[in-house]
Image 1 (spheres, rainbow, N blue to C red):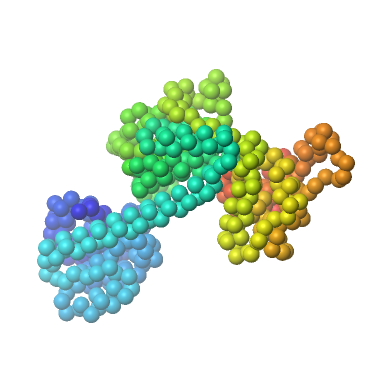
Image 2: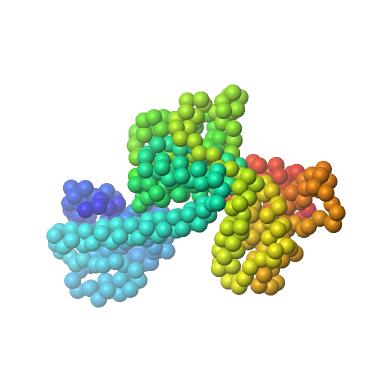
Length: 457
């Protein structure tokens, strides 16, 4: 049976001690609380699968505790402990979200049977979530990675072949080329597909926060660390950890990541216990890591650990044969998501999309199509719905390249950043995630284009 993290909430010490001793012998992780107030504090600071909650207690009774617990975390299961004469009250508690009840004096065989049901239920819920995540991941990965480009097909083919191993894979490519989608495809085709795929954007967090995000932290490890936190490495146990923007991590954290890759061991921030996890690492970057090695910014030994298999995604401008399929895919997707009936796109608008070079790659195309679907006044996308327009008649390619193209690209980039900031309510971290760039790069672009966080320029 799955071992449960549980909290026994019981004001009677003999009953509490008896339950704690019995359940610990069964291998469960057990904590205690004497009052409802203590129980709520413990739930706020710790993770529990189950509360065994006495209904009659001095002060806050079981019903009040149940309601507060369900507000704090509705996923915690609660089993009410009640005297035989108050079964009706326990049934009423079940209407408020309690999973079941058990009567005093507690029959330990009945309790074990109930706990087995709780464990089975939680396992089924997790398996359902994993299956939904797997299906969603496969649908998104296969839909967005489908390609007519020979270069892209070679990358996908190699990625599919290495999916069955536990080998570390380094995915290279410009921002927006689909590095995370390729990671999802590799995970979905691997033996780990039923376990989690956990993604960490290494460029979006400060060094200490990133270490805590990866490896977790103990209570009091730093200011604001009010409780122990499980890191992404532990969450990904048995599955895959995708480290995006791996080139942005500090040298000190590179040492700890290297140790984990070599030994599969780590320590939580502020802790001394050595932990282990079975995790397959996929990493991605748009940086030149070999140049970073020469500049002393990236460890050579870590590079070779990550670069066992290297997959390089071509930019969208080098695989324009994929544009028609991607345009149709995004049109259908965003029409569905926004409740719009978009039947197609004019030949003039499609021609504009085919001729554009997409410095932001697939993510930029995705943004352009979503914008067009949202602002379109009709059922067909026209050139006016696009953020760039055809040049005046007789304009040559050479003249466009002399400045017009650069200006149009910068104008589009400026608008995309402004749109992302507005969508993220001017929260820079969220806007950077929408754009697929680091927060540092976003700050540079905001300064370059003289954008203000209030949305005014």
